[in-house]
Amino acid sequence: MSIRRLYATLGIFALASFFAVQSVPQTASGQAKAANPPASAPAGGAYRLPAAFKLVCIGDSITQGRKGKGDAMDRMTYSWRYPLWKMFVDENIQVDFVGSLSIGFNGDADWADYKGKKFDRDHEGHWGWTTAAVAEKLPGWIEKYTPDAAMILLGSNDKAKDKGMDPTIQAYTSIIETLRKKNPNVLILIGPPFQEWEPFPAMRKALEELAGKLTTKQSPIVIVDLSKDWVSDPKKAGTCTADWVHPNEKGDEQLAKKWFEGIKPFLAK
Image (tube, rainbow, N blue to C red):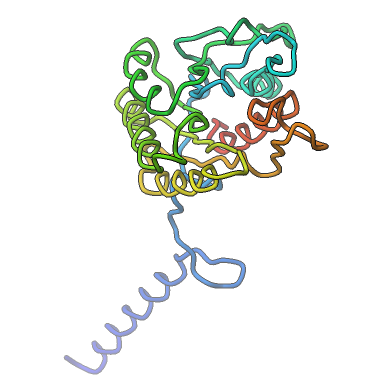
């Protein structure tokens, strides 16, 4: 090879290397960052829900809500679904709540009309049910609808303190599989139980690990931290509950805001 051809070849390699380096995204500090963030990262994958989408809210009494009898042990609870629905209305987001139920436990709470619209009451909140019980029945319920997104708040009724985390994690895995079988592109948001005492902090950690293992670009799994700023003791100032577990109106509003923050990055623009 002649000296002239050698220099020309080396010049081409140098130029290619220069452009390759320039194509790597940089952080503010100048360090290279990953070009493809995880699909579940709120800042940004390409995943978007349809402009009009179907949402199923899966849970227990915290999700179902009730009319109640008015006494200290049986107060009305709206369910976080109601303030969440109002947030969608405020933002003019076209969402259809779906599920096999449309009633509260022991009667409906005062779900008043809002801005001329009636509350979309369909849901999958089952009072007193464990995660395993919901996982067992979900395949039958879901035959009647196909959700684009699911919000899951289960585990408060599980016997994790006695039986460990495995039954809860196995049941959550089954629920995820059922949702994806019906819609491979479903967005899954998991809100682990918010209670401060064990076994719930450990359950939150286990569910975070599960989400990290099972999330995909096609069907992201997002953990929504419902425990931050939560006050369970009904006797404390700023309490979020009516009876240590079931949210009061403040608690429902707080849960709804966190769910909305979790799903907002994936809404159609």
